[in-house]
Amino acid sequence: MKLFALDSSSITASVCLMEEDKIISEFFVNSGLTHSQTLAPMIQASLNILNINASEIDLFAIANGPGSFTGLRIGLAIVKGIATIFNKPCIGVSSILAAAYNCINFDGVICVVMDARRDRFYNALFRCQNKKLIRLTEDRIISIEKLKQELKNFSECVELVGDGAVICYKYIDHINIKNNIKFSFKNKHYVRASSVGILGMELYKKGEFLNASNINPKYLRLSQAERLLLENKIKL
Image (cartoon, rainbow, N blue to C red; front, side, top):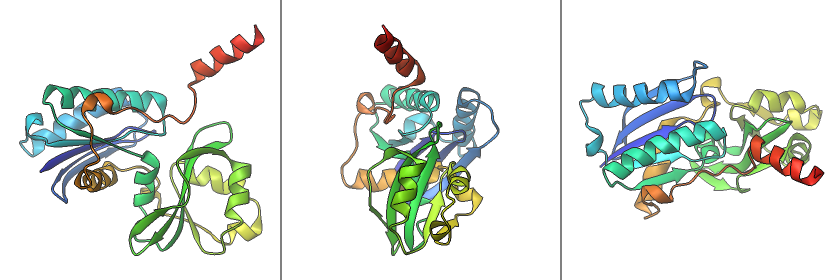
């Protein structure tokens, strides 16, 4: 079975091809270019270099949020388009879960923090034991103040991961918390398509897949345009 995975949920973009449980290629870009500029060339290059046609892909996995509204829409549009043309199943993978998977060899609490702006983070907490992730919270959007209060409850080591890790650490000024916090290596701060692919394959084996039309983004909050519209209605 060939699986194609894609992530465009944050400032980075990546694509991955897997055959069964083997990663056979991965492209990762953190260039500042828009996803509309990078994704199509990466997809084409990953197929060309292995001489694989899109019709040969059996399953598509995509990080479907939370994250950048624009990035998620672009990635989902591409995956939905290809999967629909060739009538292939799809799997949506939490971008937060995929970020946590980068630290699968860590024993302790994993705190994923992805920048949601306005001093808030897309977040979830996990406990990692024997290379297994155990959810402690659902994916959510949380303020730094509330997160600081939760982190005080852990006496064990907490590893920060995600594109908001550096920002989050700067906000944590309580010495008793900082003593327990550690950074993952910078190469683990971003969601990787390979993590999306591995998790997607696990979900597929459990029968948790959908047709392309049923894969939707998970934003967790209103877009800026929706917030402004709501604020203007309230004022009126």
